[in-house]
Image (cartoon, rainbow, N blue to C red; front, side):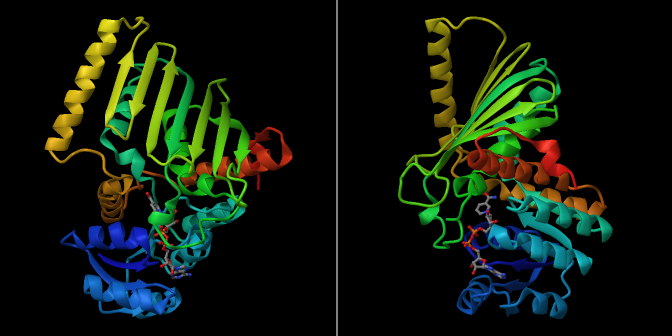
Length: 349
Ligand SMILES: NC(=O)c1ccc[n+]([C@@H]2O[C@H](COP(=O)([O-])OP(=O)(O)OC[C@H]3O[C@@H](n4cnc5c(N)ncnc54)[C@H](O)[C@@H]3O)[C@@H](O)[C@H]2O)c1
């Protein structure tokens, strides 16, 4: 399979290009960056001879089967639609789009042209997230009652020198989609409404640096996402309460446990702490300690390639990615209008 990678910034360089090149049946035939110096440097770094500054030219001159979209999020809609009309399968970085109307149009174009669309929500591939999801699917927690998620990461100035992230949505459109996707993925109920509080807590910027997004589902279950760029460390935790128990999951430290109504004694807590410490030491020793969410791109990309080969649906469907954009859009509207936003209204055409 032949791949054209569009956008040669942080995520393409650290994950997409090397991961695609690690598969023996995949060739990265061309790369594109609208800054020529970057495209040239990356082509030399990875030994890819054809580099372009215009993705349309790249797609007409190199016969890629798959387009990997690694450009700033506000460009995704245009590039995905163009590639879909040429019959290319598309793997897009998250989130699908910032604008919900653009996201809806993208899904229509993808459907009309019968191509595969995968969106990289790599946190779903983390081992503990997979284990928790399996437990939920087996109904071991009964029906979900409430979920609380925390996704804090330092401001991404050390990740990319790109300035495009510092727009209205800020952290909500950057790290937020990972947590919102995880909460929607965990709860089989349909989302009804979103209410948000937050904004810029530094007083210096014109974008969201910390936000709490509260979600109400149609079956009365609820979820709260606390999303921040203001913490100088990394947290990705989810606490899920069901009618038959509770799951506490710490993605950063690869830990999760499930309780079924029993009240913790000091001995239980000590036992858990001891087990957690042992697990952390073992995972460091075996090289499996969570270093970065992007480690899990390998799984996301390989699952997408399998779907293209087998002509099966990619594991993360376009409509799931669209719901993440619906939540962030609703959250921004809720901040501005100081009211609850009903998702059905937003999703109406
Ligand atoms: N899944 C994850 O964990 C994860 C992590 C980081 C970034 N991302 C996503 O990946 C995407 C890119 O993020 P990044 O951190 O690599 O950004 P970045 O700013 O480091 O890189 C983007 C690159 O795209 C280039 N570019 C901009 N417009 C272009 C266009 N029209 N055509 C071709 N090239 C263009 C820029 O010059 C830049 O080199 C975003 O959507 C982001 O949300 C996902």
